[in-house]
Length: 546
Image (cartoon, rainbow, N blue to C red):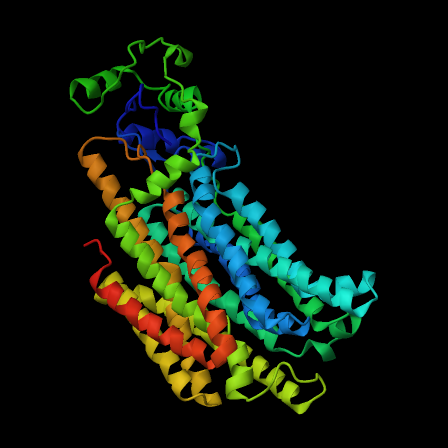
């Protein structure tokens, strides 16, 4: 919450008086809104309870559960509906292209959103609904089309279209939702709670992934629900939708957001905070040189509505696409280097994860997904896919364990050490899997995937928080308002998350062709090479705050 530029610069009582006003607040809502306000106009969120941070992290649990279901089943689903090989790359291209173009726009829009419910939560809710719709389409598309169309060729065509649409919608929303969730955490938490929150995010991300992969590894065809529903994909959709809806509801109710206030609303709020105190304290601050005020009508009996505050126009509130691109291009160099390192990490990680179950089925188990469904080769492939789910489950569990170990390692090796180790171990692990495709060694090395996953979900965003903290400290030293800057946390998180979509675009263009020519083995070798290149970039190019 910040004052407008033209008036009321820092017209607040000393922090001790604000703290007293907060303590005297009688309702929980007021306690959430009346956070610590410094004399520079910056809002310092209060300390959050561990339970609130865990509730906030539940969105990552639900999201990763659904992601795990997609990672385990999207390739078998697409192959089972008869998707041609030349369209396989198209599935992975449409969604990231949309996300790459729209993510910064939505990030900037959320920075300037004036909804009374908050800046981030409306976007999180909308994207969550799109995730559910996409998941319903790609897991149930074949059954839905079969209920309406009887002719085989037409039914197969529409099944492919509906399944592809579901995958695109789900990927788009699931990738998109990460930025608003991180920005939401940064808005409502202090710096110490941001660190804790990111670790809880990584912990519950791993647990959600583990549960999702376990759900995919189980044989639901012999269960009660398997007999009740048309296919095991519908059973999995039932569990995934139930888990995600529950987690999303808890997340949206976790920590109240302070709505973005403009014009007289913000001024009135600040005057109400100080109404029980004398305005002479403000005058004293002005005389001491701490505050600069252009509002001359403040007296002991003055009414809040008398203070003239220049209003912001609609053009100032809403950043146009042109100014948005200008903002992105004018980002400091250390932000851009961080984005590039994040791109390398996600290119390596997705190259391995998107094709891992297929790699287990075709390369490790020597099965064939195109063989007749009652053949030995197809059943062998299916067994390999199920074993791949167990490997991804190991990855998710190790991600949760490593996210806890990060807190222990951080004081000793710092963010640079954590970043470097994550890329290095993943590069070595995937290289060994590609060179020696053995069932047991592959499952053992899956634990290194979790190190990379935890690293990607925590360290880059931790660095973003450090960068913002450093910038705010510099502004405080110059006695400027900490919230008065052209680039918000939302757009920075969005720019970082855009690298996930860009990685998918690059992989969709290049890796799909390589897989069709050389097979699934090329995916883990490519992942190893890109991770080791990213390891060098992390060591020498990324800036770390001392």
